[in-house]
Length: 131
Image (cartoon, rainbow, N blue to C red):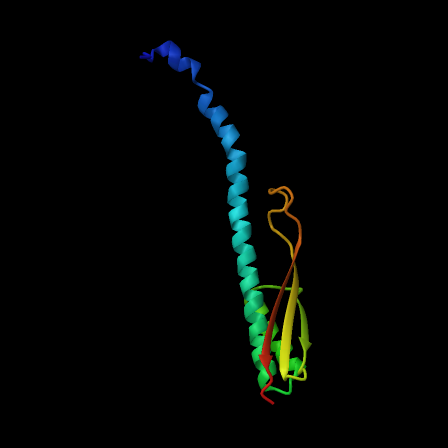
């Protein structure tokens, strides 16, 4: 059994500091990774909602490109997303209309997390044209 004396305790003075210095970088990378994944998930969901809203408007109009782009842009503006490319195609022979959104996602913590670079997110929704 070890007896902790004043001499033994002084030998361990810097141990906590060394352990903290070893664990802290891993903790910071993990924390920023969780935040970045949450942000990526949010942007992906907003793009999906915007594509769905645009396809819904396109399905009930001629499709009116201005109305579809406006509906998509309203959702993107609400989610504070800029620079998304909107592509509207259709109606096809089977009366389907597709709205595709593409965004170059820039990570906010690219400097902290090594290897994390820009991603391209693309979301598409297809609905039947009712016209």
